[in-house]
Amino acid sequence: MKTRAAVAFAAKQPLEIVELDLEGPRPGEVLVEIMATGICHTDAYTLDGLDSEGLFPSVLGHEGAGIVREVGAGVTSVAPGDHVIPLYTPECRQCKSCLSGKTNLCTAIRATQGKGLMPDGTTRFRYKGAPIFHYMGCSTFSNFTVLPEIAVAKIRKDAPFQSSCYIGCGVTTGVGAVVNTAKAEPGATIVVFGLGGIGLNVIQGARLVGAGAIVGVDINPDREAWGRQFGMTHFIDARGKDRAALIAEIAALTDGGADYSFDCTGNTEVMRTALECCHRGWGESIIIGVAEAGKEIATRPFQLVTGRVWKGTAFGGARGRTDVPKIVDWYMDGKIAIDPMITHVLSLDEINRGFDLMHAGESIRSVVVY
Ligand code: NAD
Ligand code: AHE
Ligand code: ZN
Image (cartoon, rainbow, N blue to C red):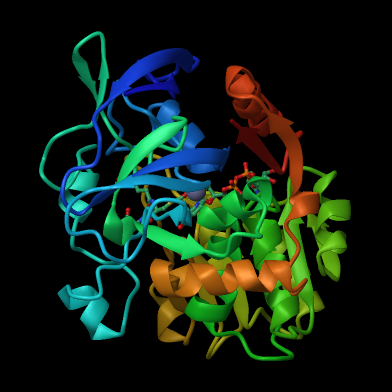
């Protein structure tokens, strides 16, 4: 079949809207009509050539929602007509990682996914006869895409696609980082670095668990109002402040240091500040941000000797097929907000504007509706 898609032909080049050939689902796969997709900073990071796994030409996009249109042989958990959210972190429920109960990082198809291929080592997209790579196992910047059955979460049919697509990454990552990874307790002091599409969801996760002080830190002063809308109690404008100044300011607001801090910037210097602003003896810092290829984190080991803990999280620790439908329920029940964070709704033809708005700090989330 044919599908319209925004193709990343090369790093640092705008996406091109073209018609691709898409092969139907093979055994264990499903064909999904993507109805809406968010644009996450991770898509920009890959398009900017900063991802060590980045491949071109490819169809980017990993934050979608859509409808199953066809299933391959042996598929039992979804059927045509089902509404689904693609999962860049699948859940096979059979691999060592899934069975461990210790992680959401299913390893069933990670190797081929990182090579831009389906689990059988081939690609379903072609342009003028040449293969086009998949991205993060999702490729939601195509109106139709093929996904492994284990990489779709079936969701309720009354959830709007335009908002539920954001649960495919940003919402689940931010809220899940607080609830699943940090397991923050009521009254905890929480510091969030970077109040964009992910950081604001960390803030609403913090509010959800009944955190005490919720401190937001950003270099964009416009983000203060955004943070306060979702539960932030204090804002720090980080412009012109060095690590020591930020740590001192945070200590004053949190009675000596954060119980939990979250990096939602991808900046390795910020990651260090996020660790070192944690309370001596128990504070935990959780890295969410994806750093560009070649960057490394550093701190004095003394920071860990004295009880601070450095952790990371992918997809908010969520087990996609199990947890994503529950997060959709939280949204539909009004427990969490999504709509106000969707600042721009674009057509596929306008997708490059979504990247421009993100880089200019003018959007929280842009969503492309097909
Ligand atoms: P975004 O562009 O919407 O937000 C980033 C925010 O960080 C902006 O508000 C920006 O002003 C702020 N910022 C930048 N530099 C800063 C600094 N030095 N100090 C304080 N604030 C600063 O991006 P996003 O979509 O929210 O993504 C955030 C990060 O999370 C990216 O690195 C992305 O790749 C990553 N991410 C990780 C996961 C995961 O599973 N681990 C999932 C989604 C996104
Ligand atoms: N490909 C990058 C790493 C990118 C990365 O860490 N991705 C996160 C999700 S970001 C979503 O917006 C993730 O899930 N990581 C776990 C995994 O298995 O990819 C690199 O540095 O090579
Ligand atoms: Zn993402």
